[in-house]
Amino acid sequence: MKLILSKNMGYCKGVSRVLALAVSALQDAKDAGKPVYSLGKLIHNDETCAFFADQGMQVIAGSEGYEPGVVVLRAHGVPDTVRSSFVEAGFDLVDATCPVVKHNLSSIAAYASSHTILIIGHPGHPETLAMRGVQCGGKSCETVLIHNPEDIGLPEPGKSYVVFVQTTFDQGLWNEIQAILRTWERYGCEIIFANEVCPSSINRRQATLELADACDAVVVIGGRESANTRALYRLVCKRGKKAWHIENETEITDEMRSYDILGITAGASTPSEVIHRVIDSLQQE
Ligand code: SF4
Image (cartoon, rainbow, N blue to C red):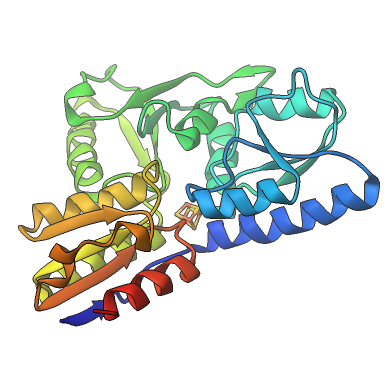
């Protein structure tokens, strides 16, 4: 069996940054004699989260009921009211919001008074919630969520709209949605597309498609809850190639080894150690 590795896999810059900041947060909390928390799981990888849990970092869903300490806000960002609830409760914030996401959140606030804000994203995804939770003038900005092309109705003639897309949104769906929204110009509307899907997601998906074309089957490594890992798995399946989504080397099967050319790719929150362990195990007959 020959193994081919994707040209682009594993941590994106935003995830690497979260982990580096989480390590500093552990130290800061220790020095200050305070408890340390992460607001939600730091990343979608159980081994990494277990490492931080062993160091004393507790995953919490909100400030209420916890002794104030150091809290890490992960890469997706948080609604402004959540951020202020921690500040008001006396927590020290370690803001690991990805700079790309942060820029989008500031732009939403800047456009809120002049444009209707359309958010293209998955309902319930933390980044979508953060975008919809931007506050301006003491209240949440008014936003409209679009998840599918079917969600799009007709515009209010002559109105100005600005569109923000979740950084990990499916590029194909995003293209479809943009094409529909562009037709709103016929109604005299202004449509501004303020951002794009993150290049890190685009490059990883493109590399996965090339990998699928070059292989008989592909193993996709990443947490079960990782939306971007699941998207890579679906891409390979759509390309007509056999694919498996595994979290680590314990899920390797004989069937995977039965293919002549096997591809390996991994989601944005998959540690390189896990990828290497999978490769080593596959190479051992
Ligand atoms: S995918 Fe892009 S925007 Fe999202 S955390 Fe990674 S680098 Fe940041």
